[in-house]
Image (cartoon, rainbow, N blue to C red; front, side, top):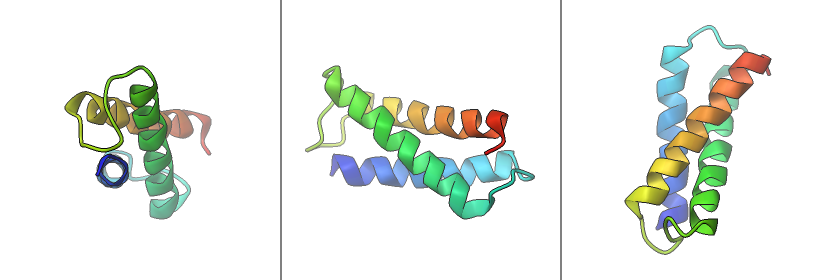
Length: 81
């Protein structure tokens, strides 16, 4: 459930980010993809440092996945990818 929940978090963050930064080049698909990648990376970092598990939706790992997704989208926006 953890991996699926990280992807869902990435999708939701991507939609929110798309509305917060409406003029971002790359479109909706690129924003969603960046958010999903950031969420997965953040989630795996959380598991690596023992802040959660892949098997269950741990709140600490979910927060790190959320932070990773936001960070990835914001960095891409600053770099104008």
